[in-house]
Length: 109
Image (cartoon, rainbow, N blue to C red; front, top):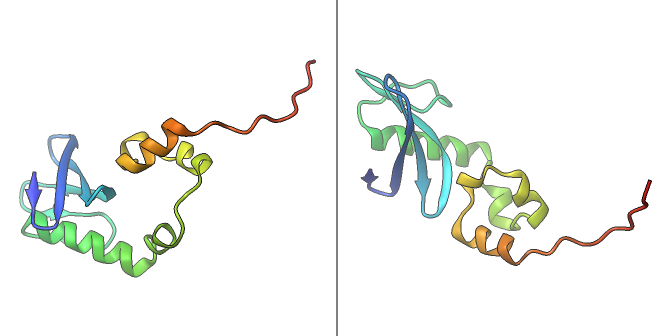
């Protein structure tokens, strides 16, 4: 589902329906479609429209500082391996494809 500035991808659920929210190539979180409203589970506000819930999530995450570290310095390949694969961007996938772990001294038992 495309909404201005965001892309929603249905994950699962019936009531509420769960959607991943993407801004550009990055997943910023989840929003939920209830029968009477939308919510994003971070600011505890009920929204009438999906775009408002997505914008509220984006604003909350930005104000909380969740995105500042990733903008300043990209995560290492080891850190990317710890992330959920669905949340990786195409650039991060390309980095992991080329990644060759350092060999460490292993001792046979």
